[in-house]
Image (cartoon, helix red, strand yellow):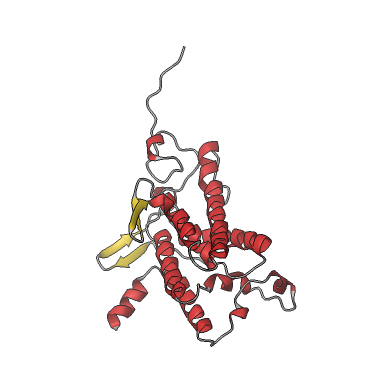
Length: 263
């Protein structure tokens, strides 16, 4: 039992906390201990007195029913931990928190406008899957019993959703997540790479004052030192030559030759 607890507390803190919160919340709703009515997002309730602002966050803690409770919790932890640990796009903890805030805000706005409200966790999972797999170009991933290019995983998840009852609703939620992740990628990486400008949506400074990013992380195999700033691969929008990190272009396009003068 102590080994299980040790492994739990050594897991990435953000992924561990959110996955646990989603699992516990969904189990409580499934067992009838609490009504899911208090967790889903309904825009009208934001304008009541007092405003029920907690719905902006709690709607992302409700998983699907039955097996969805396990699978959604698993995917939430898997993709969030992949972003939290070792991802050069999020060298600081506040960068990941800002990503979640931005993506969840866009998802909420899109889903509210198109679908009216509800629980948006499938959209968040798809958004994180898209962000993770975009940095895995050229790699393979196992999707159920099929090996596919890693960057196609989000689209396969959307296709499989259509095979289950209520699949169209889940598909639309995932589509909103895909759009939110692409918007974040466009504003933070694609547009700066092509225009030579800065990141259009950097993490606000107040998050840096509120969130402490540990410089040294204790692991079973030793101590890991976290890179920060430009050393961790943050895009400055003014890179030259070859970029072998996490640029938006395919690997074969990232290198440039010495050049030849024409004419």
